[in-house]
View (cartoon, rainbow, N blue to C red):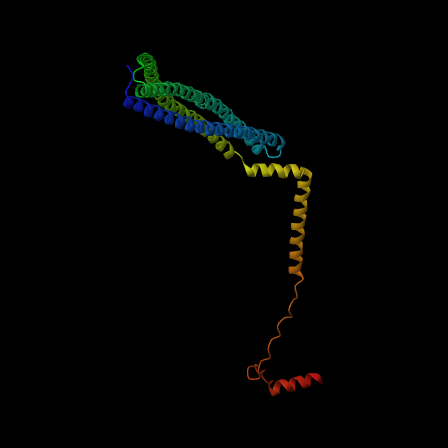
Length: 295
């Protein structure tokens, strides 16, 4: 039994809706695949740059022997940084296996679904054409029963084929949607798990890097640098020269204090006649005795 015109139009609208749906999904999943691939490539380039940085730090630590704590710190820092890049390498491989490959496979799945849609559209078109032929024949030559019967038989086969294709397409698109929902959920759960695992390990290693840098002692390294640049004999001569200079300055200071100008003693101020003591006058008898003695 052939389908009615309403059933054919409903099937046509359904097939068109499915086609638009598959085309849209193919476009968006293709964009996700391209961006995820770019993300993974950039992560791989970051891994390569990290390896170069770790290598350069290791070479610098081997050269920097005059700063022992810096050399040791840079060595441990480079080792931890290199370990981060190892985890980044694992991140790249997991992204390629669990994100990019399934998205690429969805491109093939979408193409297969679109090919099935073409088959369904072809079956529907055959049904529509047979219907038009039968209606035209009935309108123009209603008496040609044999030809009309033949076209009716062909229309029934076309309708059966179109109906079978439509049901198969419904089942296929239903499975496609179910698979897409489950796969996308799994893919992005895997993406988050991969990133969390990498960043957790990276945080642990970068914490170790920070602790390593805290062990660098600039003052000790500076002292070692000075010791390497200025040999021990030179240091002793500098110390002796400094001591001699200090002694000379001390002697010059003491000599200067001894040769300072002495002021003349202060002359006593003359006393006034009123303050002088009067000597006692001799007695006349004493004067006479003195004159007799002279005779």
